[in-house]
Structure formats: C-alpha cells, structure tokens
Length: 207
Length: 207
Length: 207
Image (cartoon, rainbow over all chains, first blue to last red; front, side):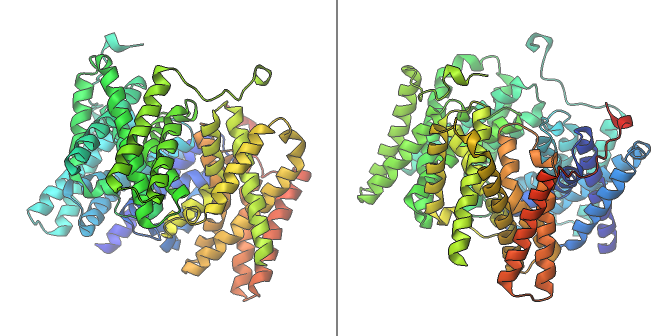
C-alpha cells in the first residue's frame, strides 16, 4: 500500500502545483510568484491541518523531496505552459485523486489524534480544499470552492464514509480505499452529469 | 457564572455565524461557502489566538457542540434569510455581547499563559475581531473593522480595563463583568451617538 | 554583535511598520486599521515561521518592546505622513537591511531546529517576505513581491549563501555578515541597475 500511496501523493502534489501555476499565470505573476502560489496550493491544506492540530514542524518542512517535486513541476509547467491545455483531462484526474487522498489522510490523522469523528471530517475536507482556498486568496479571487460546491461536498461525504466505516471497525486499508473512491466517484459524476447543489438564490433575490 | 458564560458564548457564536452568513449571501456564495464563512467568522479569532499561543489542538476541535451550533445556525439563517432583517437589533446586541465575551476570554487566557499585560490586550482584541477580519478577506473585502474602528477600540479599552483591575487584584469575576460591560457600553454608545475616531484624512489628502 | 543586531532589528521593524502605514494610508484606513497593518507587516513573517516550526508563544508575544516600538512608529508616521516622502531613500535602506536580517535570522532558526538546509532557505525567505504578503492581502492587493521578484530572489540567494557557508563550517558571525550583505547587495543592485527576471509572458501571451 505504501508504494501506491506515495505514487498517488506525488500525482496529487503535481496536480495541485499545476493548478497553482495556471492561476498564477492568469494573473501574470513573475516566476517567484508562480512558485509560491504553486507551493501554497500543494501544501497549504496539510499545513493548516498540522498547525491547528499542533503537529509541528509542519509536514512539508520534514520532507524535502516534496519541495524539489514542486520546484520541478513549476519549472516544467512554466516552460510547457502552452501545452498544459492538452493535459486538462489528466490534470482533472490527478487533482481528483489528490483531493481523495488528502481527505483520507486528513481524517486518518484527526482520528489518530483522538478528535471527534465529526471534527475529523472537517479536518479531512480542510486538508483537501484549503490549498485551493489560499491559492485564490493570494490571487485576490473569492475562493472557487465557495461557489462550485461539489468539490468540497465530495470530500465531506468521503470523510463521512471514512468515520462511519471506522466506527464499524472495518479493516483500515479497505476504509481508505472505499472513502477515497467515494470522493473520486462523486466529483467525477458531478462534473460528467453537471450535478450542482440547488441554487438558493431565487430570481427575486437577484440584485 | 459558568451557566451564564455558556449562554453568552452560545449567543455570541450565533451572532458571529449569522454575520458570516449575511456576508456570504451578499457575495452569492453556495451553501458550502456560506457554511465555511460562518464557521470562520465564529471560531477564527479564537483559533488564531490558540495557534499563536501554542494551545493545540485548537479549542473548536475539542468542542463538537459548537460545530453543531454553527451548522444549525447556518441552516436556519439560510432558510429564514429574508426574515433576518427584522432581527437586526437583536443581532447587534448578540454580536456586541459576543465581542465583549471574546475579549474577556482572550485577555484571561493570555494572562494565564503568563504573557505581558499589554500583549494580553492584543490577544483579547484579536480573539474578538479576527473572525470578522477573516470573513472579509475570504469575501475579498478590506476588513470592515479597519475602517470603522470603534469596534476594535471598544475591545482594546475593555482589555485595558481588565489588565488594570487584574493588576490591583480585583476579584476575577468582577473583572470579567466590568471589562465585558466596558466593551458593550463603548460600542453601543458609539453606535447610538455616532461617535467616530477623528478622521485623519483632511480634504487636502483626498485623491 | 548583539548590540549591532538589536539596532538593525529596530531599524528593520521601523521600516516594515512604515511600509505598512503607507499601504494603509493609501487605502484610507482609520487609525486602528493602520496600526494592525503596520504590526502585521512587521511581525507577520516571524510569526508564520514560529507557527510552522512550533515555537509558541510566538516571538512578538514574548517581547513587549517591539509592540511599543511599532505603536510609536505608527503614531509618528501618521502625524508626519506628509514628510515621509522625503525619507524614501532611508526607508529603502532600512527595509533592505530589514529583509537581510530577517532572512539570516530565519535560516539560523531553521538550522537550529534541525531542518534540511533547503527548507531553511525557504524559512528565511518566508520570514523576510511574508509580512509584506500579509500587508497586501489585508489591503486586497495581489502581493507585490509576486510581481517584482528581485525582492524575494535576493532573500533566496542570501539564504543559499548562508547554508553553503554553514556546510563548510565557516565561523557563524562571518556567515551572518556575508549572507546578509549578499541580500543587501543584490537588492540594491537590482534597483539601481533596474535588473528584472526575464519576462516569461511574451507578446503572444497577452490577453
């Protein structure tokens, strides 16, 4: 499992870093700005989780290989930025796998620290989504996940699946796989079938 | 006292959560965005305080009831969003009680950790005001308390009252009540009599 | 060295606080807003470093003199705001000395905690630059250092010099002086000779 986990972790980091590069390029930032946004998108969620839980130094500070991975991804993404559009489908896949993995990791860590399961769902969702929130704030945009909610909802449901299976003492690796796939399935289905949460703004609310 | 404290804490949390809901509705965010903004407004100040002091896991992670309280508040506030305008006066009252309580709690915790009294005033003010600052940043607005300062000034003065009375070894619960009421009185008076800090921008400064 | 370090630290804090005041005045914030922005610009980088490393309570909470220094700087800067433009050259000098010192301090602390040298370079750069990033986010601007990169690049190179000299066991105070001067020289040269990183946005990229 560890090897598979590591491969997925690498793919997720790459996908998150590239989504940071794309956002930064849109704002025409310089190379350093692109690098920071990419790094923050990749490690922001896990960093917030670590800080709130009290696991310091935070994870990325102890894992130099991810720093090099992000650096290499940014350099390549900037060089081949015009070709990135042909990778849209792969990037979506990596990104979806990434949030699934981050959700699972977050819930797992929360449970290990002994937090209430409902809090663990929040921790998992935060781990998966907060990097993107920071990316958007640094680019002075209202975070996109506050407006297209299937992204975060998928993490919440995946997290709930995790803590429910954990309650029934299912074998840990099954739990990780089932809840991870729940996130992937919901998000993919939402995009394919254009599922959205009901709009709470009726026409009469419109400004 | 504990029971009263808890009731006040609940009212303050509700008021802060609703102010988050109102800000998020204005930006037409979806349900998940509204929930996050409401939660951040409610627990943001205390979370920053805990992280800077090193009290981790942060308070809300250990107190599941506030998570449910925020969730229930958001659901109800979204359903009855058109009726919220009739509650403006109650919301102002709750919110004012909320910042008074948060200021007192913040100063108290700072003193317990052994920080310098002047730092404790900053910690109290931060606990009371930072949730609102985060709310505005997530909505990409310049934080409102940076522009209508009687809000934060009330917390600073209430905090000063706290540390001064503490220095003279006044009975702890009296201190809490007196400094809390100082915050409430100053803010209410400022709104009723439209008191503002002197404008430092003369006409000659105008762009 | 300690005395010199302290003088430089004071000058750096003043310069950072004034840069916060200038940004806040531009947004026409009230006195409280100006104070917060100035404080965040001054202590933001070190605070993030402390939180991520787990050194809590964070440094400024244990050092009341810096709180008074920032307060005094803000009061004076607001009173004499029209004269600040005559100080532009001194402010640039203080600010440059400030980031050099903050970079050195950050790398030093990172190494002391036992982090990988490459991570220490990131920690130093973060200590020097993050206050300015927070200042810009609170003013809802895209952080300026993401757009004029010689600022951060100078810190990165100074940080690299530090860890390389440290690897060869050069005498600690020499390391601090040499890497600090590297930052100062690069940034000053970049401004004097208008050196910029190559623009990665060709004309064909323009929107």
